[in-house]
Length: 245
Image 1 (cartoon, one colour):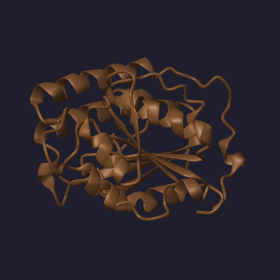
Image 2: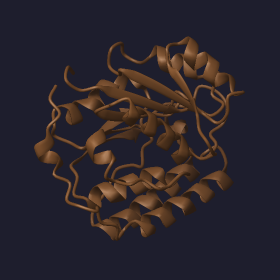
Image 3: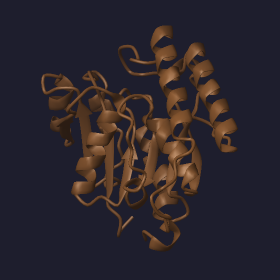
């Protein structure tokens, strides 16, 4: 991995029971920077993250996309070559990060998706969440003519292309916007299956309730339609840029 600096961004709003375990499972030396993004400084997640070597960041306003955006902004300011995202509730296994990074570091992919495999832990994704996920994926297939396996929180993207996607969503539409724009920009997208696990504690802000799932699904569908005609300001010649490992 020499020659490329990786920044890991972990949205973790009120995850004090999970964040220490998540950070302890991160393989040593994989990420140069680890940013844990919280909703406000009173969240005990921030102090626990800092005690385990991560840099806590406080997002300026609520929203999953806002947490990702704040982390990405700081990572880019530090000069990161590759951005990685995973959730702070322990459902995304940090030990899989090297597998997701490999296609980006080998310059064979620009965006790598950690598609959730629930075969071992079926209860990790409730039935209503699976239905909502499938619905959004079906709409994406119709709009883009491309089938994705999942809409994962665990993903890796090269910083040079991320900057040109002009990400705007600040809530749950973040991942859909990224996938739609990446496909519209004809980026190389790889999908790597990862074992999805039940969250370590508490209840998901989205899939934890039917109401939360429906609201998120509506936002995802709206984002899919909104960005389906998006085009990059200029051609992204990412294949020639080459991050070497």
